Amino acid sequence: MSIVVRAVEEADLPALRELQARPELELVDSHYRAHAAGELIFAVAVDGDEMLGTALLDLDAGQWTPELRNMYVYPSARRRGAGRALSRWIEQYAGSKGFKEVYLAVDPGNEKAIPLYVSLEYHPIGEHILVDEHEVLQVPKNVRPSTHYAVYKKSLTAH
Ligand SMILES: CC(C)(COP(=O)(O)OP(=O)(O)OC[C@H]1O[C@@H](n2cnc3c(N)ncnc32)[C@H](O)[C@@H]1OP(=O)(O)O)[C@@H](O)C(=O)NCCC(=O)NCCS
View 1: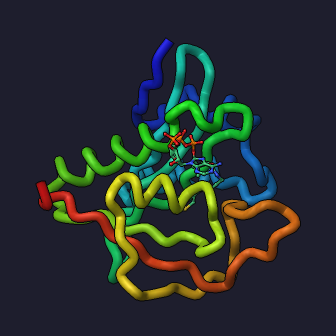
View 2 (view 1 turned 180 degrees about the vertical axis):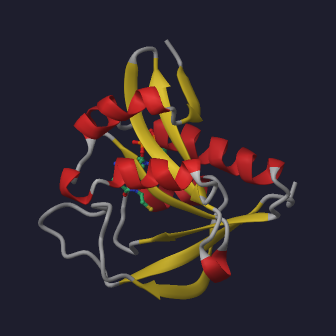
């Protein structure tokens, strides 16, 4: 099988709810509502019937819009290319809407995501955002999450 990325559909919600890392936050439902309202694009990576992970493109992220946010590949599906496929799909979507760049914010201690983003040509812009709610667990449970995430940018017009 191969990895396909597409927008989340209503029929996906029961399965995505079951897979949530932090069900108490009800992020699947809030992201789907925002997706339906046009505030963000909520994407899922699948391989046949298996859901691999999700990410979103926030179209209302203030100074650093659009923002690739809340990327989460389920632990059992990691290192199979879903993170890379989700990032690329999100970038293509942003480019198709006329955006010239994509931003993201990452915990400086995130040893999995930073190599992914660097390999996709995201660069730190030297700015940080204060994070009080860690919606996505980016570092192992025995590592204290940073209170400041580094902002990275990718140009969509560099090539
Ligand atoms: C970061 C994350 C999204 C990567 O997803 P993934 O599907 O496993 O990543 P991919 O298989 O697409 O890997 C792409 C590249 O990322 C890097 N990478 C992924 N996992 C890595 C790891 N454990 N250690 C080092 N580099 C890693 C590698 O460069 C990899 O390329 P390679 O496999 O050719 O060496 C996933 O680990 C995750 O969900 N982590 C928890 C949540 C999180 O940190 N989200 C990011 C928020 S900014």
